[in-house]
Length: 317
Image (cartoon, rainbow, N blue to C red; front, top):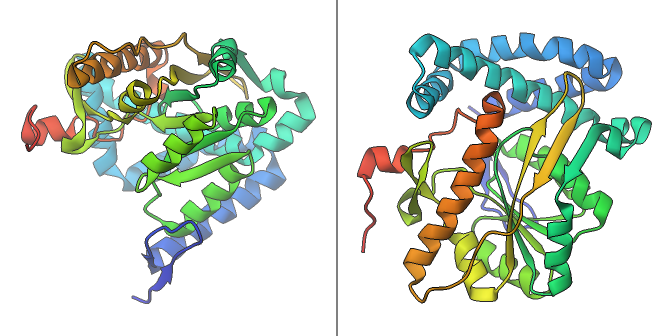
């Protein structure tokens, strides 16, 4: 199989581009070209069909999602699978919306598509001059948060994990970079986030993925989950305001609502590990509450409890 190398000016590690990557990328660009011509209504009709096609070949991740839902919500196998498939359909609709986001904002106006609540919490944090940390997750159409950032002229550094397909990753990053975000890989992210916070800007982190044995174990959906500790460590170190924010689909069409919650209590007791666990437990509880309001809109296909399932609640010394 012929491969080539991929690298860019951001310092990402060179990754091999395989024939599979090229086929996936070509398929996605063909889909995008069709959606750009056919429009939103046709995209919404097509998305469920593509979702059925995709899940037929991705049975492994469908089963992961089904198992997560069954354990997290206590549903039987059939009900959990239905919700898992609903989640896939939701994310294919999100893909259509991302492709047409700018066009629809220009056509209908920002507030007709994306409504917000609690943005004053971010504004007050910025006014305090110590920076803001926004914790969010793969819920709703989280990419619309970038559009809010652009509309409000907030300066943001977002930490992200590259997609497995480097060609698709480059393409998706071009969408994100167009909305005034500085995109930072997880490797080397601490320095970039500290720099943003110390300038009084915003650092955004996804907090709903397994953090392996480096994480703090905090409850999520009734089970301990390895949770990234970086947001809490940064808040305790810098005095930055920490806020949670989550997106949710609110209508049958292109309608989304983004809620910025009041600040998390990041006061220090002098026991760093205990403080980090308390802070990230609060963050997980907020995510769980938002997820329960729209369970079909969360990324269930991620192995959220992988570390606990493999190693239990222990980390190497």
